[in-house]
Image 1 (tube, one colour):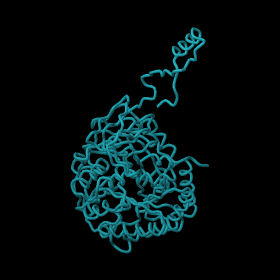
Image 2 (cartoon, one colour):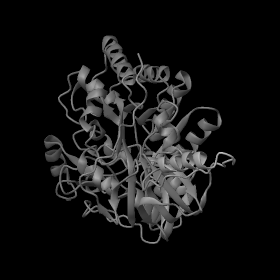
Image 3 (spheres, one colour):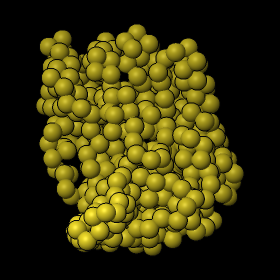
Image 4 (cartoon, one colour):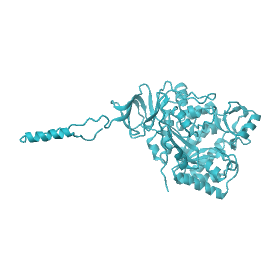
Length: 498
């Protein structure tokens, strides 16, 4: 809207002539606004959709106006824009924020966009080179992106581990010296100074890391106000190496250092004990410890077969055996012989160990966020979670199973992840919301048809029911199809510090 009248040259000329011809009369001025076709016009209008904002509680039919990548109007009144998106019968929600996605490549981003994700974050493993990681994606990304500085890659680099994605040598199996711990501290601090969103930690993959080393990493995170996103040291129900014991370790580290804690994929850590782990998180929160957690909506996890997770004792710890492992490359279930063969070769397996009851209990709990733990797409057989997590929650668990309601589910995917990060990275104060001034990261979907299509047998399929996805006001999915040649994704990064 224009804040003051604009006068035309013609208006001034007319006034001048009248003043010459009729000097005895008092001339009253009239403002004549100029009609510019695009002056103040909205770039896009989302019209007639059911707008849901988990922060304010708005759940009503509204029109949403977008300009310069921001939401500038939310109203019942008619709006005029250069582009009009008809959202009648559809839900207009904040774009989904995935706190835990390892596949940070263009193909993964396209699958995530079709799953409603507008911001994809690698916060568990992270990177050892924050500047380089962001530079690789600048101007080339369909959706927003962000990363942590990772204890795993930093430890691998310092200890000269030969592994690529996960450690297989000293970084997994050798205790760090005092000098190496100091180098790890310094590298993590440097990553945080360069704008890493958080500290990533996968203690299960660095099993030789001492409790003292873990506490030192938490101390660095606390100094920079960064949350620590932790894959716990143990999973399963076997004592003393249970998921519950592992959770005790990091809650103690958070309590003693003041670092915020985020526990990743709590269902794959707790298995049938998941309710006990969630109860421990709730108890810590009630006593003032800043701890959050997440889950994905599948009864199976996935990781590298050559990692420390499968060191001797894994069967007893997880309560499973070879037949519960699926070799991702071929889809075959493993035997003792193929386990040894593929473990030497290295690659990804899918682990069927999570009870369905644990999945349902996690999704129903209001403090548990939704995050995919999606994997890089290295072949035709990967875990479907990277392609279908968010639509599976909304389609299967909300609409079909009624495990939770729609607004609660959206809150787990949008507002809660944004709030987890916004203290350290203020950019998230304008994400996860539908309000004036927020980033125009918006997902528009049909609540009647939204569903995941990716399966364990055929995982590389787009989800259904997502009509439009806007990233910084630019459509990347339109009428259910990918928009080609657009790269509106921006870096989600914390402020740089000395």
